[in-house]
Picture 1 (spheres, rainbow, N blue to C red):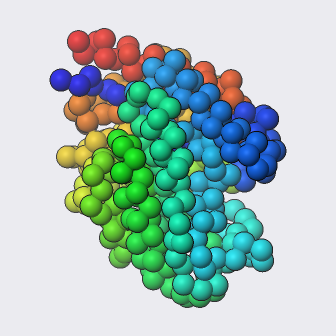
Picture 2 (picture 1 turned 60 degrees about the vertical axis):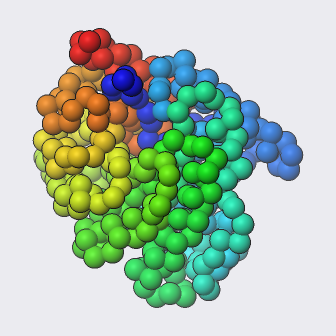
Length: 341
Ligand SMILES: [Zn+2]
C-alpha cells in the first residue's frame, strides 16, 4: 500500500539569483545561449534537492525553465505576436502587457517536452509537470483574431493536448493544468471551461490535475481578496462541475484563507491537493500549523485522497522563505501521518 498524505507543491519555486532577478513576475533571464540552458538545468537540480530534503513526495521542476507559467508556453506557438504587446486586465484584477493573437494558433514543435525529459531523469521521486489551462491562457492574451474566448480556448485545448501527450510519454506521473481563471469566470467555466480542460487532458496515460487558487501573493491579488467578504465561496460554483469531470485531482487554496473547509466535500471521488502553505505571507508556517490544516481537511477527504500542498506557486517569495515553507509542509504531513499510523 502506498503511503497516505503524499506531499506535493502547486508548481513554481523562486529561481537562483544568478538565473533571474528575485521576487519579480516575468523576470528576465540573466544568462543566454548555452549558459542559459545549463543554468536552467542546474536550477532544476537545486529545487529538486530542496524538495527531496523537505520530504516532498511528488516533486516539480519549480518552473525554473520558464519566465512565466502562461506566456512562456505561448511563446512556442505560431499565431501570436510578442513584439507588439497590448495591455489587458488579467482576471479583472491587474494590467499587464501581453502578446497578441494575430492568426490561427498552432504548435509548430514540442515546447516543454525536453524539460519534462530532464525532470524525469533528474530525480527518483514521482514528478508532476504543470501546464497553463486553456481559460487562463485566453485571459493572459489580447485576441485580435478569434474574437471569441471560447473558440480561442478550444484551439489552445487541442494544442495543450498534443503537448501533454508528449510530456506524458516522458514518464511523468502527473500533469497539472493551472486554471486560476476558474475562480473568476463562473459562467464560462460552466459553458465551456470544464469541456476545454477535459479536451486538454483527454487520453493522457498519467494522472491529471487542475489547480485553482486565489493567485500569487502579489499586491493586486491581496487587494482583490479583501473584497471577497468573510467567506470565500467561489469554489462552491466550480467543485461540483469538477467532481463530475474526468480530471483526477484538484489543487486548491486552504491555508490562511477564508475558504470554508467543508467546500472540499463537493469534490467527493477526486484526489484533493489541500493548500496548507500560504504563499501570500513571508512568515514560515510551523509544522503544527500545517498539520492543523491537514487535520481539518481530513474531516472531508479520506487520507488516501488527500495530498498536502501549497496554496499556489512560490515564485514571488524569497528563496530561504520558500525552502522553510517546503520543510514545514513535509514536517506537518509527517506529523499527521504518524497520528494515522
Ligand atoms: Zn495558483
